[in-house]
Image (tube, rainbow, N blue to C red):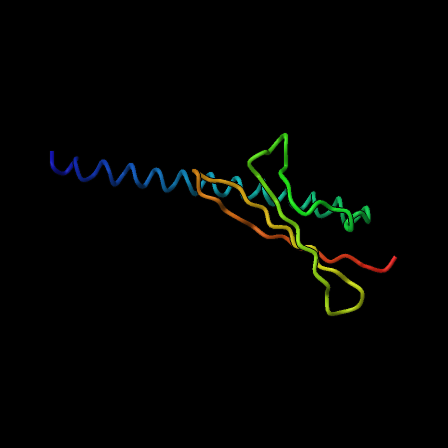
Length: 106
């Protein structure tokens, strides 16, 4: 009986960790796709100067938020767009960062 009292909490903790890892991986893939689409949309259409600096991916993914940084690049007339995407996994915030270069000259 004592053995079961020790074993059951350990097994349940292992299941919780495995579940969290699976959910985190799934949401990381979603965040990567959302960020990739965002960066492509604004860099390819040349609207990156007017891109919003923060927001959410509502209505489909309202818990996924983003912030966008634009910094000058040392080489040529390029700018770096760095997109930080934050998403929750079991009430713990996770963040990934995606970046790309855009040409400043018209």
